[in-house]
Figure 1 (cartoon, helix red, strand yellow):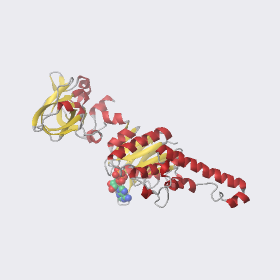
Figure 2: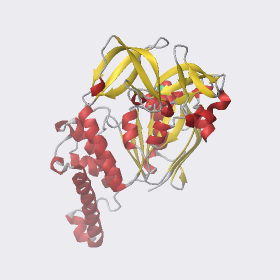
Figure 3: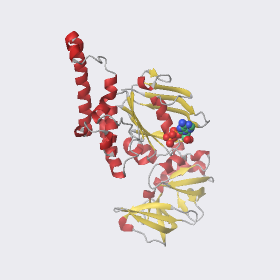
Figure 4: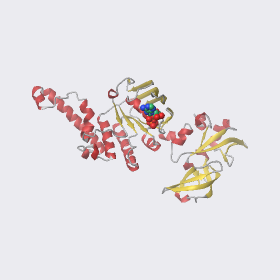
Length: 392
Ligand code: ADP
């Protein structure tokens, strides 16, 4: 068990690409942290630097008490699970899982009948060592429900089974930290959700410090104790899934986390008769009482309002204001419907409503906004959340 600490970590590849740019992050002992962001944001590079598979161009990485910048991957006491599983094809599942442990045996070569005669104590120690490995492999296999596959080779396994073996191989090593690099990307949607739950259960049980990389924000939100949202080699926000969802630090995080994504409306904050209003040109929305004081200093300034699809409605809501829209497409999802609409100012906005309130396509509609749940972002300065800034 161990903390993992990244201090000012950077990576510049030989071709000049700055893949990671001054990352600072502390992953607590037993914590499950997910690095998430769009493709190319530097999350795999960050993970690979922790694993020792990439050199660090600048900064420092600590695993436990040790600075590992110059420590070889095999000596870092971490176990990595890859997207492509990376199993040895010529070995059985059992052999794949036992391989790393067998390699680091202290009494290697002493478990044979000859040793029994010439060095019985050594022989016994070697047999005990093998029995210990056997126990660890079988315990991990039982935990993952793959006991019946131990004698199979990888080519005789399904994708999900292979992934379980790859995870099992990591568990048996009882490392200081698990590193997962998009481990579920090769699985179909249903299996991915199953494996996701399995990995979470497993972490609850073994409680090993875990760093998990994914581009899938839903996977990140469901798995992580904390989520690290990255873009362009930099961390944009670190927080619990709920924190990142409810208090996004900036417009990028707000738009990246959540499906369907947050809607953004351009406008300006204006003072009208003692209260503040968000003026979008085609409609004016009264700012919620709880935001009035917080937003006072932005009066007269352009701002971007963010509203999650579930805070927009087709029926009047308490604390609501409304604006005119034109419904373009509806997507029924069973219990709810995603209603896509345009406003005079913007296209491709979406609200998620109860299926009883299905709107007709190609019709005008009034969209009601829960004004006390909206966000405001600076139109410049990387779109920083202004409510978050003034509230903290
Ligand atoms: P992610 O995992 O978030 O998709 P990566 O860490 O793989 O992103 O890549 C970050 C950036 O570094 C990308 O621009 C990518 O093209 C670049 N990159 C990754 N690996 C290499 C490499 N071996 N050589 C040069 N550039 C690389």
